[in-house]
Image (cartoon, rainbow, N blue to C red; front, side):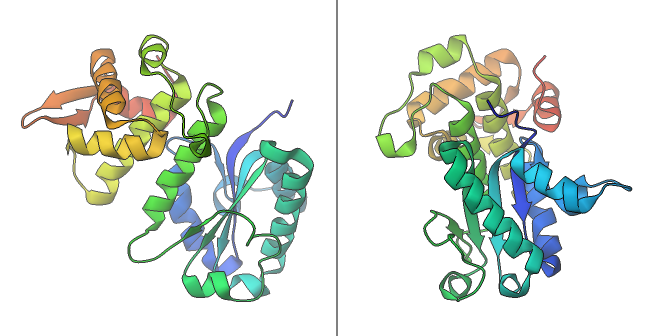
Length: 245
């Protein structure tokens, strides 16, 4: 059994550190993320610490830009990620994030990546959207009772209402919190929240509405005027610390 220390390992070219840090900030409220510029501390032997962190991660997220073909260390991390995926199977996933269609089609740092279902950024698919998709993947990987999207099955909402899992709770609230941050708002209509959770958790909108009601009952969300909801202090604390009280 693998002792995961991180949920996501972010691989990127040196000039793309800013993109990596933006993705780190989007993911870190709900997940354990390794990014060299944020996770290494003074005195760490980076040539040992970085490969060790990748081996202790569930998912390697590869940020592919026009800088990637010439990025020696990122190419080495891609090779390591593909090797881990081949040796561990479902226990290590590789998800490429292509900065554009041009990066997807370009030759270069794509060894094994084109065979992986990834995310291509565009004016309609932002880095925030990519983070939401990654959190959805994490929820699937951590929740043994939840079906994969390809199976076409969904989990029963009743066991969740009685035994709400920590990972599902944190991920769900993080999706809502991320919506607030990206749009600089503090409230969201309950129907809109249900649709977001439905696409993230592979549940029906009715089931997500019941899930939101469970969060209200537990005090993670509070009701506001106009059938809107907002994060309570305990909900915000849960998102930022990842701990259930």
